[in-house]
Image (cartoon, rainbow over all chains, first blue to last red; front, side, top):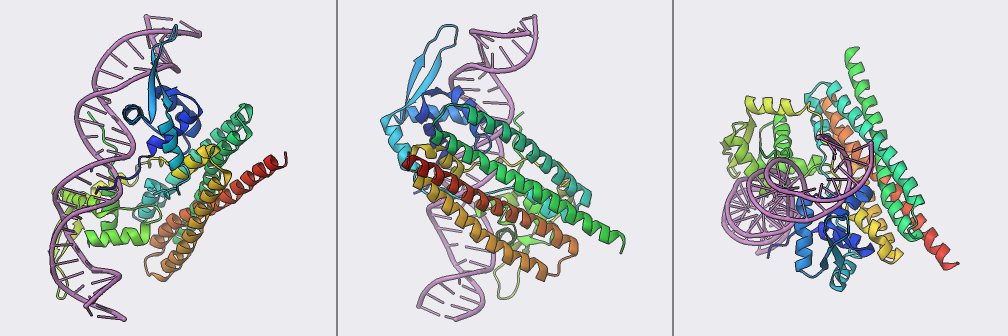
Length: 190
Length: 190
DNA sequence: GCCAACATGTAATGAGTTACATGATTAG
DNA sequence: CTAATCATGTAACTCATTACATGTTGGC
């Protein structure tokens, strides 16, 4: 038997539908707005998955017609879907398998001019500085919403993960640039 | 034209072959030993890719027979391969697209008992504590080798990325557990 | 009139994992 | 003798991305 790796998209969808019924478009938007710092989906995966979940009776499709608006396909989680989600939620998470092109280039940096690697590090640093700004604005937004205390806390905790991460990466970039400069300076005067 | 996302495995292989010719088995081992904290490959992807690179003349396959040893297929990077690698190396890196099942479960933690989420956080913390131990032993190993100063530095920098990351994740886990406990305590006495 | 946002999907392709398949050599 | 390590691969499959395809609604 071929054991497929678990389809996480399924649970991302079911989890979001736990709050309220949504269309594929709504789900995509919610992920981009709220979860983008640790999750992403694209339509080419999302729409076929919704159709599959509907077929499996984990969600129920309903066509919603509203005035001055295109017909939307709104998906509601079923009892079966809720059970499936509740079964997944307490299961231990898989540890993230990390693959970083930056670190590959850094590791192979021995084959390039040091300034090339320093350039990557500055690029990465800037990327995380921008992220930190985004995190701050999302944090303010979380506080403004009127979700429950509990909902806000878990959202905040997930967000803070990104903040801790970006901060650590900025420190690492600075530290690494310093180390490379020290090496090249030593080379120059030897 | 369908633009395929860049095949990074290709460059991981070419980069490793820059140091010396190796077999598929050697490459897998080197990745597991040295790069596992930011890169991974499996045979099912690696062997077909080596065959492809050979067909594209980026590497040259040679059968090496040694006494008391099975015949090995050793791959050597060609001039064309070196050029291809040199073209990739200075190109700006793609920012890592991050997908974390842990954060998905944390975000949806609002639907579970707080102790479930705290369990995940403790599990993640332990994972990173173990990683930190591994990093320390690799760091000692790096210092013991007689690679060039430059080679060691870039290896160390890549390794330190993991250290910075794991440290930040441990802090985040502790912080998050504290926040969740504070919420549940407040609930209990209200 | 035009652009952004709303709205839904399919086709083609490539990336990556797991299971299957086989066998030699070496250290305990 | 037996387990770990050496050694190479294929088949089946799922996951995920990108490009293609189409059309509406609302604000400036």
